[in-house]
Image (cartoon, rainbow, N blue to C red; front, side, top):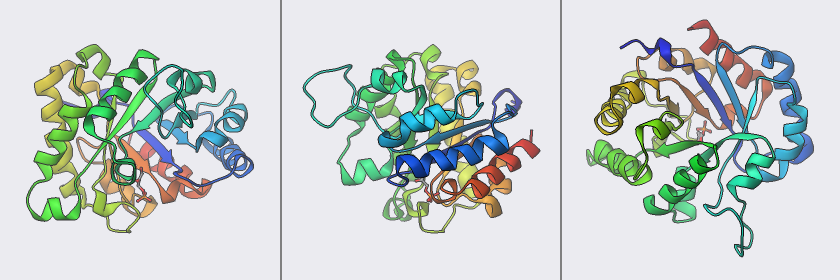
Amino acid sequence: MSKNIRRYLIAGNWKMNKTASEGTALVREIHHEIGHQSDVGAVVCPPFTALESCAKALEGSTVQLGAQNMYPKSEGAYTGEVSPLMLRSLFCTYVILGHSERREYFKESDAFINEKVVAALDSSLKPILCVGETLEQREADETTTVVETQLAGGLKGITADQAENVVIAYEPVWAIGTGKTATPDMAQEVHGFIRKWLEGNFGEAAASKMRILYGGSMKPANARDLLAKEDIDGGLIGGASLQAKSFVELVTIARSLV
Ligand code: 13P
C-alpha cells in the first residue's frame, strides 16, 4: 500500500504560548512563506484567545486553523468551556483532542475524549486524536496495549466514513518537550501497529486514507528521516512550531518528500 494517497500534514500545537498579537505576527510570517502551497497540509493550533485574530490573518491562506481542545456540547451551562460550534465560527478545521498534557493535568479519560471526538465530527471538525505511552509504560513493554486502549476508547462508535476525517497523532509522552525523539524505526513500529489496528476496525480503504502524525521533539534536524517512514504522515509539533522559520522548514521538508 503506497502512502501517496495521504497528503502530509504538519500541525503546530502552540500549547499555552502566544498572545493574540504575537500569534497574529507568527501566522503572518508563516502565511508569507507557505500560505500559497497545497502540496502538504499545514495547520496552526493557537490558544483559544488567538484564534479569531489568527483566522483573520489567514484569510485566503492555504494554512488552516485548529484548536487545542473543546467541550463536547454545543452550548449551555459549562463555565469556562468552548463548544465545537464556537470553533467552527472562528474557521477552525481541526481540533486536537486527548493530548497527553490534558490526560495528565486535567485527568481526561478515554470515555470523555471519545465524547469530544464524536461531538467534533458531528460539527464537521477534524479531530487530531493523540495517543502515546509514558516512559514507565514503554519500559514495562506496554506500548501497544496502551495505544490500543486509547484508540479503542477514543474512537468508540465511529464509522469508517467518519474515521477518514480523523487524524491520529502518536506522541510518546517521554519524547514531548524533552529533546528525546523516538528513532524513525521506533516510531514506524508503533505507526505500523496503529495502521493495522485502524484496518482491523475500519477496513483497509478507510485506514489507508487516515493520517498518522508523529509528535515529540520533532524539528527540522530529525524530521526528514521520520517523515520518510511508510506510516508517518506528518508531525504534531510543539516547540518547533513557535517560530516561523522552523515550522516553515518542516513544511518544506515534507514537500520535498512528495
Ligand atoms: P514538542 O514538539 O515540544 O516535543 O511537543 C510535542 C507535542 O506535544 C505536540 O502536541
